[in-house]
Structures are given as C-alpha cells and as structure tokens.
Length: 269
Image (tube, rainbow, N blue to C red; front, side):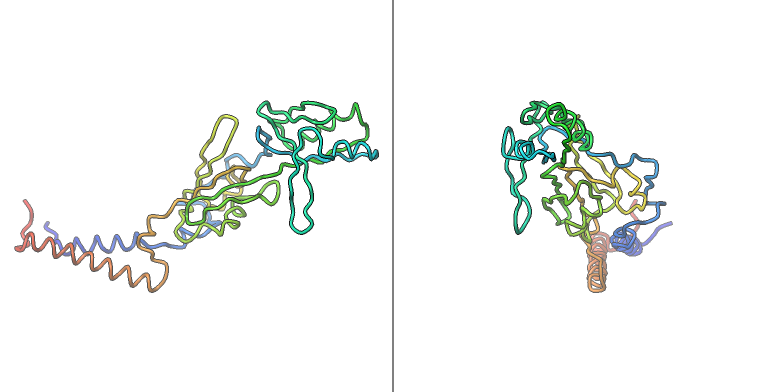
C-alpha cells in the first residue's frame, strides 16, 4: 500500500518532536529501578580509601611528655608546612608517601604506608613509636583530598570537606548536573594501583546508595555527558512552541523539496 509522502513527513516530525522532550524521568534522582532505570543492589559497597604514593599525611603525636610532642609535631625531617583554614590559619606538617610507599618519620625512619587504610596506617605508626616513647597516640588524616568535575557546563576542581563524600554531595558542590546533563551515563575516572579505570553508572537509580559508585575517592574525575536532547531544548512553554514551529517548518521544507523533485506525487519504482 502506498503511503503519501506528506503523511510520512508528518509522522517523522511527530516522532522527532516526541523523542526530543526532556522528561522528568531523565532528570529526577532516586527513581525506583525498572525499565530504563538499573538496579545496583548486588554490586560492591564502599571500601575505605587505601593510601598510595603521592598522598600527603597530616600526623600529630600526643604524649604526656612535652619534649616528645615538640619533636614529632615540629617542622622536622621530611615534613612540609602547609597553611590551612580561614581566619586564624593553622600550620599543618605533612609527610609525603613516596614512590616506595613509605613516609620518613623523625627518629623512626621509613614506615610503610601504601596500601593501608588511614586506621591501619595510624596503628602502624603508633607501634613504630612505642619502643622509643611509650604512652603516645597518633592522629592522622589525608590532606589535599580533591576531585574534579568536567562536562555538563559544571567543570571545576573541588576539595573534599571530609574523608568520604557521596556522588550526590559531589555533584551538589559542582552545582548539580544541569538540565542537559545525561544522568544515565555518569562516568568516574579513578586512579588505582593497576592504572586508571572508568566506572559508568546511572545516578538516577535509587539503588545507587547500595553500589560501589555511591562514594567517591580522592583524585576522582567525574565526567558528565550531554543529553542529545539539548539540541531541541524543550524544557518550558516558550521552548515547546519554538520546537513545534521549527519541527513543522522543517517538515514543510522537506515535503516541498520532495514535491519539486516529484511533482506528480507518483510512487517510486
């Protein structure tokens, strides 16, 4: 059965118009898994960050002996003074985790740190200090914990306010994904001991909180891809009218072109 070209043009225009709409399903978070929303309940959860070469550790030793405190908490050995805080800045003395995975601590020497969690590293340092200075405790944390966001018009470099933050907090710091960001294909570039890996996930799923994607790590790069629908920009009433007029005009143009090529409207062989 022959279908008139005019009807074909109208059908194509309507399908194009409908596919260009940015619906709530494409932008809302915490949606119930199903249909286009994946489930992540069986994926791996959050694991404590493990130290690696290039990390800087703030270390403070607490002891009942003032000389011991002055020795370990002053600017000695392989430390670097850094300024932190706003309004009454405090000096932080940090130790670099070397390429060999160790820090060089005064009076102690090299102490392996790479591959350990902060809790494990703290315990290892306390045990290394104990033979020389008993009744000492150690406070340790990673400084210069940062992540980056690129794409979606929200690019930036951000400092993590605490040891771990989740993907929603990270996106909030960057001003959210934006209307035209593709929430179904968020990517994280993550450094590991075996090289850089790429993790792709759908941040719209409510199950994201059960997954390995929920928490970010230092030096993560979050990439936000742009929706294809950005070309049409159907987000409000004015843009709706604009898109309808543009789509109709485009359809008329194609129909007029075909009619000029085939003025008798005869079916193709």
